Amino acid sequence: MAQTVTLSATAREKTGKGAARQARFQKQVPAVIYGHGRTTQTLMVDALALEKALAGIEPESTLIELTVDGKKSRTLIREIQRHALRPDIIHVDFYEIQAHEKITLKVPVHLVGAPDGVRNAGGVLDQVTREVEIEVLPEHIPDRVELDVTALKIGDSLHTRDLSIPNAVILTGADLTIATVVPPRAEEVAAPTPEATTEVAEPELIRKVREGEEGEAGEAVAPAAEEKEKKSPKAPEKP
Image (tube, rainbow, N blue to C red; front, side, top):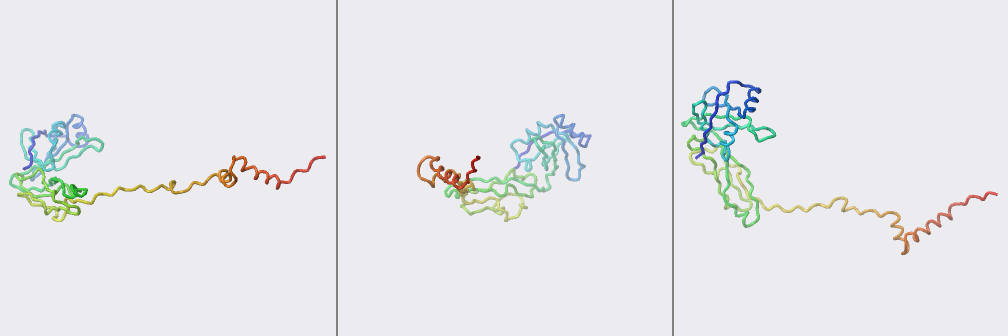
């Protein structure tokens, strides 16, 4: 069964960006409640109380008993908006439900057990799908769906059709993969860089030294200097 948490809210008369900004300045979170033909009502919820209520639960599959100015309603959270740069909640949508009417919602899928292919063959468990959509009466809403993956070997998969959710109709396609065990990932060997594969050319001076006889660099270069002097004509002496 789904968890139920209690929360209080107050009616918010002013609407618009300015009013919402003012509410957040006062540590209040703007919200709305709608559903079953009721007129959409704007609300304010204490930011700290909301964070505490949502801690450790699955918001989409948790029943929220919302009290608005003394009147209680059973609701589900349809949407939570958070600040783009901070984890702060900036808006919440509450959807009122009735006990006798089925509702459509998404519930998280939790994998249970250590797969055989992971324990004995070094495989890797990959959860492809993390939630499924169901149709169910409010009293039968599960807080999550568990799927046993213990028997999975490398290459094996489990699909939506392998889920069992009492008193609910699964709307997600039966062939959708939930989890699979893949072979161990091979370690990648870094390819040699172009600098490492290209032989560095030796300086001209060093090559000449190696081509000559053993000795100091000056001894190997001297013959080349003498040859240059022979080829260059001397300037005539002045009388």
